[in-house]
Image (cartoon, rainbow, N blue to C red):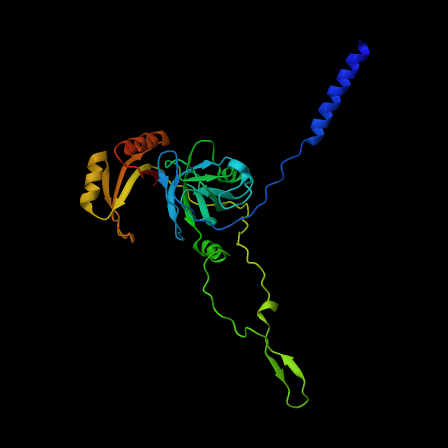
Length: 290
């Protein structure tokens, strides 16, 4: 009987070893960054509509980013908690922005490569490393982001999948010149098949882990319901939501009338006002820090 038990344990043990030996680790993710704008996507309370911009400047609340599902960012990079990267709801990817913590003045430069945050009450998500350099804590942090126009344009122009104007290059075939003196020949042009056709790659700039010290600001929060071209429309929205109308001087988008709630001194107050704005029809309402 003892020998039968020993044999059974031996068989089970052998089976376990065999199963363990068949286990394979998942292959590591490969980074394949590509330029993307993308289609509209649905967040937790509203829809977001990505578009290409190169002069973005805005304020709002930043949060610490969690690892995206699958480990890849929206533009195909392998996400790293130590990278100087972040997520934005609508800007083309990749793009480069500076981020200033409005409470302590710290500034870093990051590459936006993912979509998010999903809530319209939050503007930006950054990796844990970026959060540490900015002095962020677990609570949402008021920040200002300013796009690096030149570098962001350089990234966009390097997009190998962008439509290109086809310009015929001459000569298309090799041109052979023959000397009238000794009959020797010389090739002056290359055949198209002999030309170098190296594949272009998207320019993805490295972001150094450098912190600059800027000026901290006094922060008050507003909930922006929208900007409008006509005062009558702005007045109707303001009356419906108990909001204020502000004339924006020097705006170039033809929407001079801003409707907003506030100011509020804390994030919870701003969040409650944002929920109120959604209930009265402000589907595109969001929080800004001024």
